[in-house]
Length: 424
Image (tube, rainbow, N blue to C red; front, side):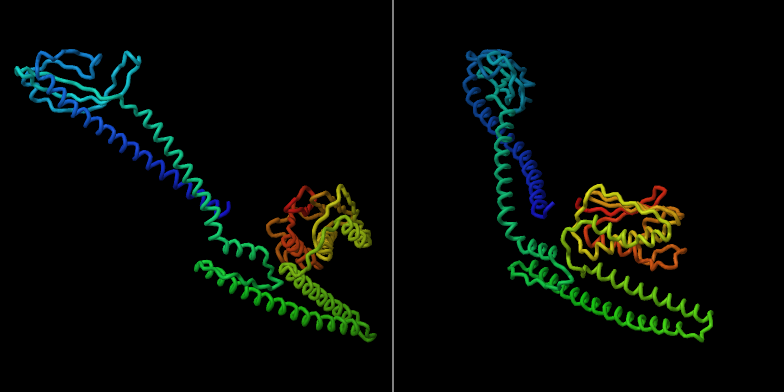
């Protein structure tokens, strides 16, 4: 959810709670004022009515509210002197309306001119609380809609304009590429917090670009400085091994040293390649067909697979075009095929299946299921392997992470590696 929408949702929730709470309080206060108004009207009417009924001859005793809105009955003097004015809600049945309705009832007592005591009960007009609730609810609904629309308009015009520097910063961070080293110069903003944020982000990116360039130069220099003496050392050892006066044991030892140097050279190249992949130093590619790459690499490994008597089978169910640098795509497929052949058994099988959104490489092996959590870590290799640097699958994982691809491992009796698209 976007920040602005989150703010709108938060404000709307507060608005609903606030208006709802205010509506309840307003209703009871308004109802109280209506009752007070009715009670004041009854009190005034009481004065007029009692003044009129002090003449005993005008008193008509009745026990129900029919033609009049009051009833009168006799009281003894002792009880009448204890009566105080009391107001309360009551229900009155109307024969005319054929229903009961709510009203205010005043109960009091008075004495006539001949010292006789009477109780009088007077009712007000109908107190229609249901209608009052409907009117208040309708008014509050319109008020809420007005406030909600106002909030949305403020959100779209005021908040968007206020948060514009923040979203510009997000777009820049999304497009920022460390290897290009282009530092963004944001526009000046009057909002102090955004100005400080832009300045902090700019300083942070600038520092990271400098560190990246320094590390990149160091890795390239270190790799070059290591590769040159290794190549010279291997060349001199090969020349030394050609000497005729060397004993077989010496030639064997020189061969072991050459093998170590070659492994060290291979390790150096793999580490440099891994660093370049993780730092995204390869030029972005265009959509290319993996079918073409797979067929070429299988053809390159034909001699080696025939030497180890490994049957290679390729099933192209559908073409998959993936946006990837061609060199990187070759390294990805080659490392997986090489891994499947090296760790295969003599006379085993290698099956590659290509579909529209993924491809799998499956190989037989004498080894049990592997630990998928550690399989793609650097220098993770089988203890039985003397030729592997332990970086092949780490390079595959780095390529997948840098190219919006997913690489997974499973075991079904055979070892299965699956490369698929994250956006597919």
